[in-house]
Image 1: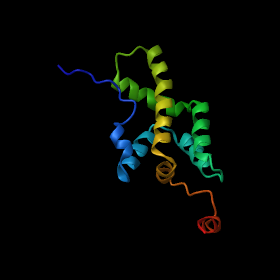
Image 2: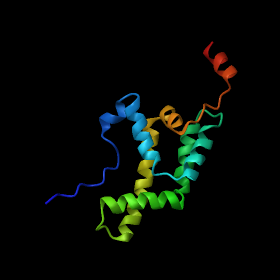
Image 3: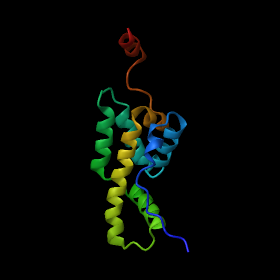
Image 4: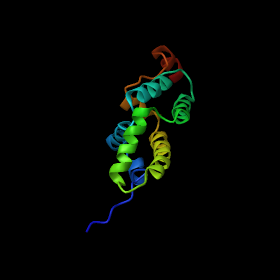
Amino acid sequence: LSIPRAMQKNPIFEKWKEKGEARKVIAERTLNFFSADSKDALARGLAVKEKIKFDTALNDLLKSGGDEVTRQSLLQAIRKELPALPLQQAQQHLRRSFRHKVNSLRCLGQRVVMEVLKVSDGADPAEKKSAKR
């Protein structure tokens, strides 16, 4: 008899501190739950030339609540982990799960998320050179 494990909302804390590939893998797994439209909206938000673009893009994603494809993807994962959960509770869990996914991206950081989404920095190369001097 196996004991069902609770759905883990965030990866183990030590994984957040690791550099390189581990953080990238966590970001890829998190972004797999999002629809192509949600990923595009996030990428567009990250491509602007603002200092606070990362938080703005993630906050806009939170405000939207995710599109139907993203919600179905998360609901499918919830039903897989917790099959006996009543639908009403699954819907509540869905909102929390979406918020946790967005906050996971926030914890991983802008550089990792931009790298996974293949978004280039909004600043021009000439601006970067002048900023370094």
